[in-house]
Length: 213
Image 1 (cartoon, one colour):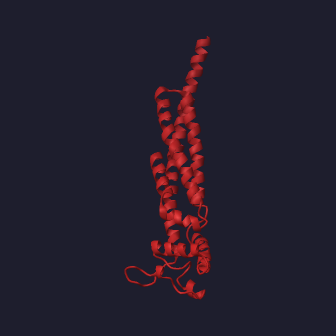
Image 2 (tube, rainbow, N blue to C red):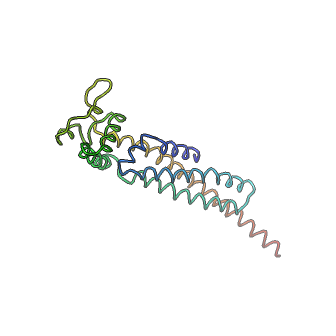
Image 3 (cartoon, rainbow, N blue to C red):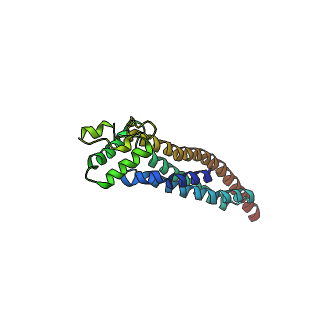
């Protein structure tokens, strides 16, 4: 699971399409979540071995170290879930994205960056406008060619706010879903390792008492 979390985080972080959108929209917390999950995945891979070794050798010190790192990973995974789900899904997320995309629609005539961004997102996500393709006409602009479908040459009906929301929700679900699954497993691991540590500590205390006698 740690390797899976690390792999998915690298995949989302390395997605060139998402990088383009992050440059133009305020969704940088998705990248922050990727870095947090990478750190958690690496820690789990490294200290998972230490936890197994501690249990095999019945070393209270190793087990305690594993428990401490597991708690740290739980905190990191909770932080990752908060980052990817910070903006509520559904209509509210779509409203936030549409509002930011609409700023680029308004600046498209005067800004090369906004024009390139809109052409990119409309071609890749097969969408048109921030809330609807009528956004361009409402601003007295012609509908750009990037709004046309390659297959039918018709204007895309879906808005870019909606299509981007769907893409982000899917990637957020990957990161958040693995993080939640890991948290459940780690909670069980903490319980078992806590019991093992308590047992080993009790045995050590008993041996110390017998030795003193």
